[in-house]
Image 1 (cartoon, one colour):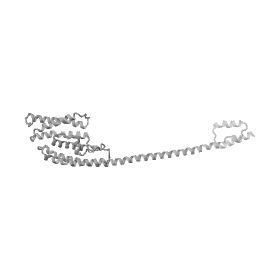
Image 2: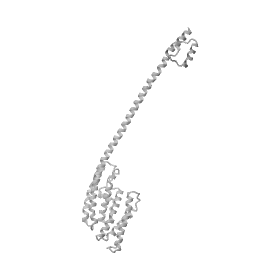
Image 3: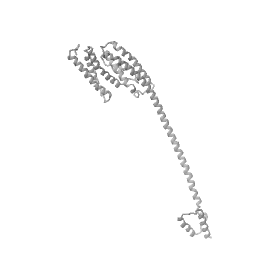
Image 4: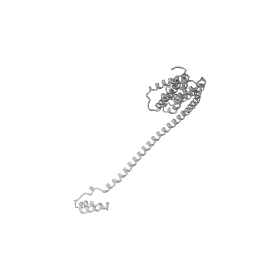
Length: 296
């Protein structure tokens, strides 16, 4: 009876696994030598074969869930990047529009300063008379209106003065130099910073005259003095070199008080000493020739 049961188990297991592992034969042969074992206690290979199929389905589900989560994160990241660059596009567009408006007014300021320069050329061709300064002075009010327009534009975007300052900086320096030259021709004194702000309408807290622009404008004005001295001596004003030299010496000494860096302002100040030397040479020539009408 036991032999019949062992034979039946052997045939049954062989039918489930027609190509058994050769290493499993010793175990089967050992079963023939074992005493009677209840068939109900024997493990079934069918149950062991079902487990891999369940694990494959589980891993496939997990992979699908992971891929779905990755796609959702990618879409969210792409949306945030798109929103950020859309915001950048709007900012750059608004900034470009504002800059175009500022440059349009700056061109008007430049045009006005050119008219003042053209009018002041008459100063170098004859003796100074009040009529010579009437035309350039008539442009000062127009110049002030342009700066009022700039102030209104910047008032729409507070806190951006120095961001767009470079768009009208050179025009402002030229305007200061012309106003300082006109002021000196009328009074013989230096145009002070508050006075320049008042003439240009730049005395507001959020839109004022930058100190460096004022100083560079004064340096530009000093470039005109040597030419003015030579031309005035030519037309017979022999006392002009003495007055210009006194003004120039005081101005140069005042600039010496500043601790200037190696920038554009320092270069313009270094050029002032050459203008001062030219005035000194003219004054020396006039003095040794005995052409002075007044003493020092």
